[in-house]
Structure formats: structure tokens, C-alpha cells
Image 1 (tube, rainbow, N blue to C red):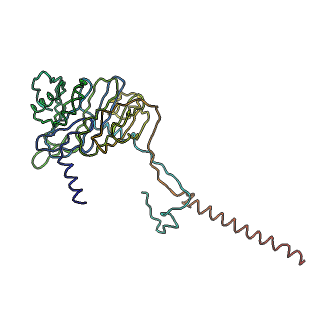
Image 2: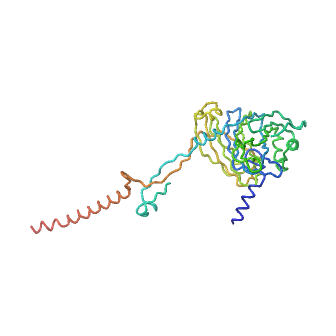
Image 3: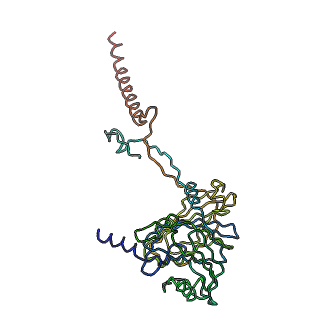
Length: 364
């Protein structure tokens, strides 16, 4: 079993990360990169969709290309990592005490010890079927915005710029090409010091740890989150989404994964943090936090389309069970039992006194 677990860990480390949530990660030949976690915040106002993504990666790749299909012309800027801290704080579970009457295994008299258990790349190749509609340097990222009318053309552009597109990934891009979607292609490379997007290793600088978030904006009259490329993943995938819209939003279906679970739903002011206000425009919005697991990624059959549902608020509650006490920690059950015993004893005494009273009177 130990050998099998070690083999599984090693396999997950060396496997190329062709799929990662809403995009595809492609390392250089003979280098490997893995995406441990992808966290995304999505803002939609009915006309424009904004997606802020942060990747946590590992491996030995010194650079990689990340491709994300989008339904319209996209603008790309750097995101604010503090946004995710703000969203995490807003969606934390509520903690409440839940009392029980009768003692349990950790309570006196069962536990005499009374222990406490609470406890992207150079310019394009110039081919007519691939258009470079924009290219800029954003901090540690080289960002190119592309149009492509042929999956092979996109593959050719990537190869020209130093990356090899796997055949399976090229096939999965076909539906996006047919729908005339565009692409955001980003060349990821750590900076010279390795402090922004990578950590310095003995032989150079590798892409490791949390990468600087990217913020992608595009026009859209529907809220869509690209997920189709995740079907190429060889290990179970998980999706975490923070959705900020005018109303509570949920996926139309599970697209081949487990049923999406709502962790939080409720209206927020939108100004609690500067990073949040920059995404909401300072307006009140409805925040929905979703988690979904994909045990068998190959079953993913499309992209997530989200729809408006009733604005029913929800917050996860984590209960701590505590023995019901009064005063200085005196168990209520002990007082109750003592009171019952005293009452019973008093009743017995009263009955005995009453039985003796006639005999005393007759003797007189």
C-alpha cells in the first residue's frame, strides 16, 4: 500500500498539467507542472463578465503556457491576491454551541479525568487563421490575446512560440473554435528573484507556489465558466467558485461531476475591502460560494452555465456540542436528577408519616 501511495504521488508530480479548471497549462518539453488548486472569483453584471484566477502550482517547469477560451474579446490585467482573503472572510462558517441534556462519554461521571476535547510568448507567426489581437507584459506574465479559426492553427502558433500542444487538447479546443470563441494565452515565467511567481531552486527558478492572480474581462450576456478542458485531467478535480452578481447564481447542471454544493449565499455591501470594491464597483452584490468535485474528469461534458435562482440566504453552521449547565458549570441533569430524588424521598417520608398518624390517635 505504501509503495502504491508513493507511486501515485510521484505520478501526480510528473504528469503534465494539460487541464486545470477553466484552462489548460502546458509546460516545456521534458518539464512538468502540476496545479494543486485553482481559486476563481467571477463578477457578472448582466453585460460583462470578469474572472479573477489564482493558481497554486508545483513541479520543475521554469516556464509554461496557460490557455483559456473566452466567448468574446478579452481584456487582461493583474488581479489582487487580497480579494481571495476578503471573500474567504465573508464566507466563513458560523460557529454555534449546541447543548445536550444527558452526559456523554466525555462528561462526568463517565470521564473521571474530565478532559477537554473541544477543542505567453513572442509575437505570432503571422498566419491568417491566427490573429494576435493584443499582447502586453503584466508583471511576471507575457499575455497574448488570440483569435483562431482552426485548432491546428492555434497549435502552430504555440509551437512557433516554444510550446507543444498535445493532440487531445487540440481536439478539445474544436468546439470553442466552432463557436468562434477567442483565447487568452499567457506565458508564465518567474521573475528574476523568484519572489513573485516562483521559488528559486538549485538549478534555476521554477514555477512553484501561488502565482500572481490574473483578471480577465469580456462582454457576455450570460454567465459562463469554461470547464470543458478539465475532462483531460487524469486525477480527480475540484472547483471552487465565488460568484458576485445581482442575485444568487447556481449551475444549470452538474456537467458530469458531483452535485455542486453551496457554501454561502447572501447579499454583501461590496465595499468591505478595497480589493472587493474594485471588482464590485462599490455596489451591493449577491455573493454565492460554490464547491464541486469531479471524481472522473473524463465525464465532464461542457462548460458551466449559471442561472439566477431565488435569493435564499445560506451560511454553513458548525456546531460545538456542550453539556447543558448552570451557574458555575453545574450540570442541569444533575440538578434535575437530584431534585427528582429529593422529591421522591420527601414523598416516601410523607406517606410513612401519614400511615403512622392513625395509630397514634387510637392509642390516645
